[in-house]
Image 1: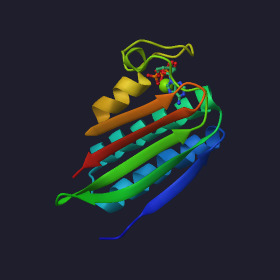
Image 2: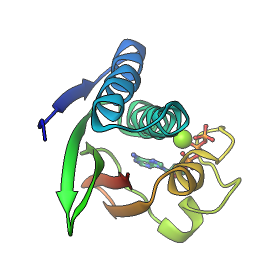
Image 3: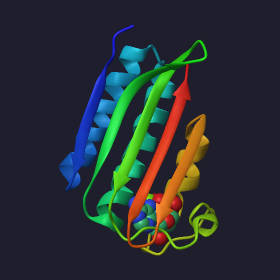
Image 4: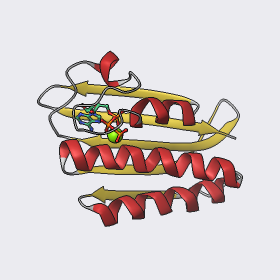
Length: 133
Ligand SMILES: Nc1ncnc2c1ncn2[C@@H]1O[C@H](COP(=O)(O)OP(=O)(O)OP(=O)(O)O)[C@@H](O)[C@H]1O
Ligand SMILES: [Mg+2]
């Protein structure tokens, strides 16, 4: 197994495009089909956009992972922004504090197999998602 890995600093719109494109490349390398490649890169751009909108800067890590005989992709979106006060609310379809659609986080959860979010007010937010082949 190759160990494709990419770290993308998020600081502007170009970085979102770069993260999306890295997601496509790495998921293809992992063996995901076109539909899953698009699901994964869409999830990545939602997480990257949240970093830009709410935390201004942060980092997206994309890598191949293997666990329990499974093989897939892991994306970690990390920032040291304001954090999320109410995680249940943030995960509710339609809830937004930024004038968006409130679809990014719940949509990302549906697109991926595993979704984990850790957030502390004043400290930041880390979202970890995985998809298995
Ligand atoms: N990285 C983050 N830091 C701080 N708050 C965040 C972060 N990501 C999400 N949130 C909070 O969670 C809410 C829901 O996020 P979500 O991505 O689902 O919707 P949205 O960004 O408001 O709209 P959309 O993604 O549909 O354009 C946001 O409105 C914001 O309050
Ligand atoms: Mg969003």
